[in-house]
Image (tube, rainbow over all chains, first blue to last red):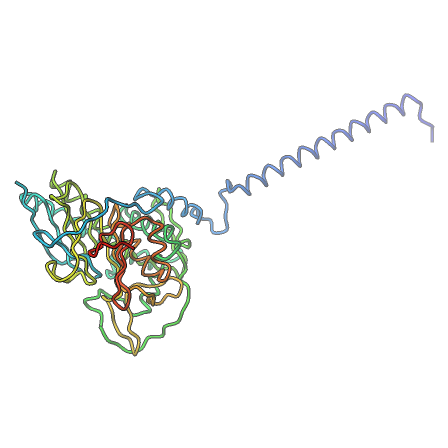
Length: 95
Length: 311
């Protein structure tokens, strides 16, 4: 087997450096890509779930807290006063 | 001169009273209330097999798109559960049926054979999968809704608003079995409300009368809608923690709030909470009247105490 000339050896080393750089850059891109997918999934942006339905408990909680029927606390009113029975009196009691 | 007028009839298994400050508008207001109550009965009666709620309860595990009215009622029930830490929970449907309340109360046998009652926690309102924007609901298997408590109060609020819109002006009061909602301008001095343990008591009977400037009043009581199964005396207010009728120290609680719905949420939660009810009501800032099982009465917040001594 013939020995490599210095020029051939230098070309081989340069080729090896290019391959190493390419492999490293590719690995970095892959890590970033996988991380993005993982982060996106963890944040709940993925539409996939085991049951295949778009509904979930989180949605339920949000809808409750942003209810249009009233606010997120029980609302008070002007204080009632003592009165006496008369026309139009109705009874509040259990039923 | 305004003349207060009153109309009374029976619907949703209870007595309905409509009061208007203008007698000439009573007819229009009454018609509007009738329409709302018919819609409510169709949407979320637990005792009609053809109601939307019955069909929803019969569709476990399936997504169902419900009407705007049923969606509003479910939304209100979930809010009630959220604001009461689950003391008022719509997923008691199965529990209340097991306790024997499985039909309109007028058709329910007051006495019957023993039922197998055991303590278990209801599924909880968080189990309901509900998107109020799309109005799509999914009840997991084992989850059955009962919107009776908040549903009736919501109906009173909706009916009062509809009646006022139909009347065009003045003021309207709607009472559904003692859950009272008002809308518009009250009569001079406020709406007169006789506070009792049973809504069937005559308004001129013994007891306290309050004048309400606005908002709503609701009373929850374990002294009505009672039935016997074997040796057990049961009632309609279910503790979600045990699935059984409540056994706390208060038999009747009346609350005033900005809406009948909020008043009902608070009165029902107070019965369920029992020992902690007074502190909780005070933290809510709602005027309330509580009757202990032995008849002792407590006045909370700005509720008018006939003796002039507030709690």
